[in-house]
Image 1 (cartoon, protein in one colour):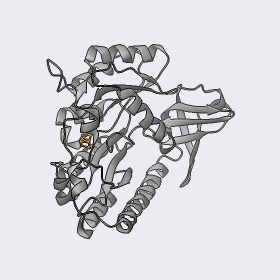
Image 2: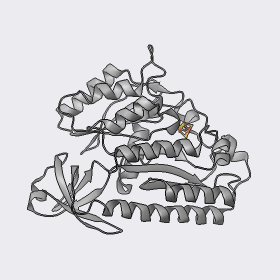
Image 3: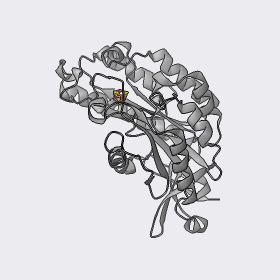
Image 4: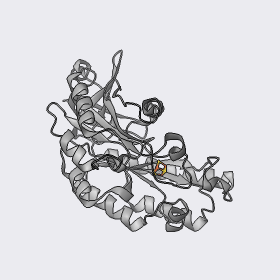
Length: 329
Ligand code: SF4
């Protein structure tokens, strides 16, 4: 499952999220409930997928796309706000397809426009977005709405046109770049992430180098790299694979670029304050997650006083390759 795995939480919490998403999904048609994420509320608004990417089992496992009606989503959002959550994460297996299955059809744009009006909501974070389903009006809205976190995660999967075609994802790298450049221009402070698969069947050295160059030069600030592994029953599982050693080397190479880009991104915010949610408190250790997706270990007295879930201004004091520290100001 390559969509939505990594968009919302830092690495440490990723496994928890996957478990939550899986447990949330339930049986087809089952009522979807908000999950107490402890510090941020995850509201799943959509399940299933009608796309047929050649590597993906989700449509077989989770069934067709289905959305929670907007009025039910709003009720869930109001409930979690009442419970004291300041940040809501809106999630779906194929979030951008939200509403297409409803009668009358709805759109993700109209849903988000309603959600941001809810009193008491401070931050709204979006799970993985499909670049093929990002019309201009939606893009403009998410880039311009202050309550929406400066963090956008796109399910790009690859950049080479040949591989994208074999993946069954009708899209072009130029379109990806246009979206990324737009988000970066509108919100230069935004964390821009992507899911990437390398070692897809018949991925040539040229395909890989194309992808590598794309990732290096794009405004992406991190990417989650998956080394392709066949899912029995999917079309791609029957195609000739790339040798394991090459797959591993390619994935390692891309992960290294991601680490470097992410460090450079975080360094830009040294000595700056950002909105953040206190996401963990254990003994005298506290952590916050900024709106632009930087996990900060909190130090200082004021930080100790900040409660879990609270929205606080956090100044970043130190950035290293492994951790970021800061304080509530
Ligand atoms: S869009 Fe493609 S990768 Fe994403 S869940 Fe649907 S089939 Fe899978």
